[in-house]
Every structure is written in structure tokens, then in C-alpha cells.
Length: 185
Image (cartoon, rainbow, N blue to C red; front, top):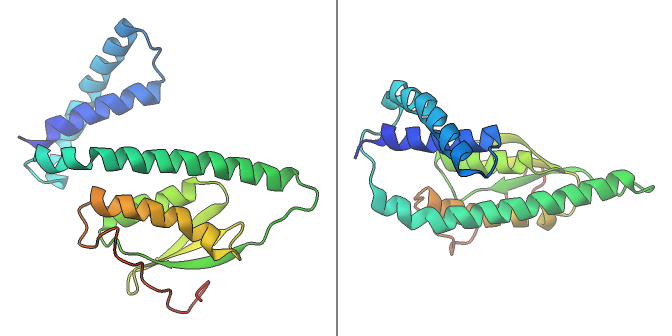
């Protein structure tokens, strides 16, 4: 099956979320059709940027992992928001910022970018840099001096990303040890 029509439908679904459609069947169908009118031509125009064929079997296998990744991300997002609000409203401002080096098991650009964006979207953390030579993300954390508090959610995301993006490493593989530099052990 060609990939661009599938991506056009995915864009139409994303259109529903962007538009914030009421949960009324006729509104959902109407906005979905508008999303298709926009999504299919966009997917067609950019079709040369992705593989021509789309295989469903491996994609269906990763659906539960995508759900788990999103669930963990939303949980971390809520916890981080509450934590940052507490730190801002607390008179003592318990902030101990630092930069933590996090060597990764994922190697594909899309997996690294997904994890880096997840970090940056979570309040209290920011992906500062990526070192291609050592496959390491440098993350600024509001509680960076507590390295494990910064690294734990990132490792959970990475476990799911290993499966989602078909990486060579396994979630059972031990994470690489930090190699000196900022935030290293």
C-alpha cells in the first residue's frame, strides 16, 4: 500500500485535534473531511520524502507502545507542571539547576528527536544539545543535581521509543554509562 494516502488520513485526524472539534458526529465528520481535503494534497506533495510502500504489520505491533509512550508522557507532563508550580509558589524556591549528560540507546534521528522534544515539552527540563559522536543528550533540569530524577522519565520514553522506531537495541539492554562532560558521574 502507498504511504502518502495513509499519512493524509493521519493528517486529517490531527486536524481534528488542532481544530478542537466538538464531540458531535456531524461536526467530527465535517472537520475530518476538511482535514482530508488539506491532508491528502500535503501528503501527496511531500511523498518523495518518505518510503513509497507502507507495511501495516510492523506498524500495528507498535501501537500499544505508542499508547504507553503517550501515557507516560502525559503523566510526566502533569507531574512536572505541578512540580514547577510548587517551586514557583514556594517561598524558598527549591531550585537546583544543572545540566545532565544522558547517553542514549536509540540511534535513529526520529527517535532522538522525539525524545528530545518530549524533554523540552516537559516543564522544568530543556534539551540543550546533542552530541552525535557519543550519542548523548545534554538536558538542563530544574532539579538537575538530582540526576536520577531527570533521567528516570527519559529512560522510560527511550524504552518505548526503541520498540516504536524499530531500533537495534532492546529495552532490556542497559543504558550506556555517562562519559564525563557536563552532568557526568
